[in-house]
Length: 126
Ligand code: SF4
Ligand code: SF4
Image (cartoon, rainbow, N blue to C red; front, side):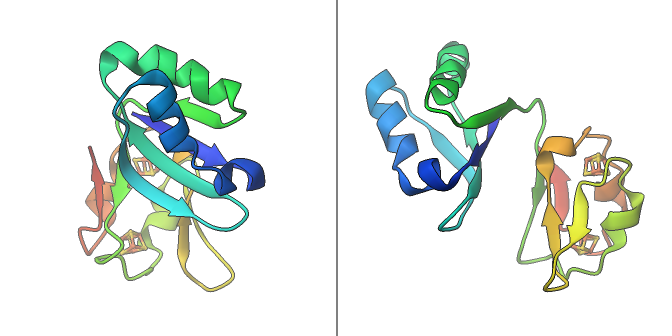
């Protein structure tokens, strides 16, 4: 699994489709959050193609990080209580200006502490 960070240029492009067609590979989008100027995605590809796809995204100028296990938040369960903010050792969670919790998954060490602490069962490691 990979996490992608899209900048204003790549967020406007159909980058996933482009690479899927160019490399003839299926790309499964596990999670996506795309705005007009930036975006984040978690994708899954066949292990055999993983290295090639990793290099191709880099060639397109997309920041890409390989994830061994992925922290997933169920946005329907999260009530933005903030219990995960102080418990996380690497500051993955922070309140944004709207008093909602943002997640920076690139900092996650997969320790699982937040999964245990969340009172609403909104977090899981997959
Ligand atoms: S502890 Fe759970 S419900 Fe509270 S902000 Fe974190 S993920 Fe959301
Ligand atoms: S698994 Fe550990 S490092 Fe990752 S977000 Fe939860 S508490 Fe932070």
